[in-house]
Amino acid sequence: MSNNKKKNLTPTQQEYQALAGKREVKRPLFKNCIKAFLVGGTICVIGQLIATFYMYFFKFTEQNVGNPTVATLIFITMILTGIGIYDHIAQFAGAGTAVPVTGFGNAVISAAIEHRTEGFVLGVGGNMFKLAGTVILFGVFSAFIVALIKTILIQWGGL
Amino acid sequence: MEFFWAFIVGGLICVIGQIMFDVFKLTPGHTLSILVASGSVLSGFGLYDKLVDFAGAGASVPITSFGNQLVNGAMEAADKHGIIGVITGMFQVTSSGISAAIIFGMIGAIFFKPKG
Image (cartoon, rainbow over all chains, first blue to last red):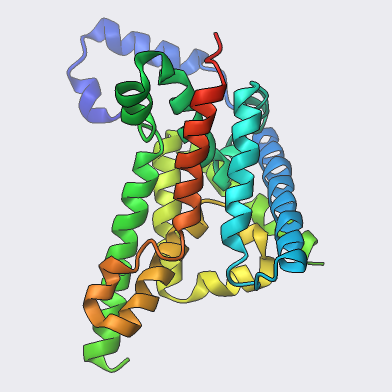
């Protein structure tokens, strides 16, 4: 909690914050990193397997093979999310499943399944990108800024 | 050998994410946003494509590649159409990730029931 917020609290509340901070279970950083490394690495190896398969049988090149690979991984994520296995893996792996594109897929798909009871238009349609929208927003906006600067430098700066 | 480097590089990017979770106490939303943005910045310097060449899926499966591909699409179109291409070409390369997420999300919503 930021210091700014702490100033507005009563002394009792500050005492409680200090106590809560002391009692908070320390997150096992090293163990979590190992788990994330193993699971994340495994997902990337699976991706590499799929990519090799597409390059071998469907004549994709190394540059554009990422597209079908990502789509296939999201498809697998849909199956695992639907039958409820993905949550168990995600709980074990932390960032290991969140950082690969499977995490993005899971955010979209689980939101879609969860809000289905509110109907397809307002529920599924309205909530699908509730979690994943931030990735798209900042991805697109940062890419826009970067590409804009680079284009200006190349076209008018003679880079 | 490509599989080995895919494992190492992909795993390391996930460890960076885990450190952001645990050490800086960021939410998954913040972490992923930062990773995507750093992917596009690395792409701007031309570094991310080298990483993809080196590690294959180890670099193209993590969410950082989303930012990279957005920049690549924008730059490809900017070569052809000038500054307008930055906007028109952005999703040209990366369409599959988003369309797959939308399509499979809809299929999932039709076929699976929410749990719990």
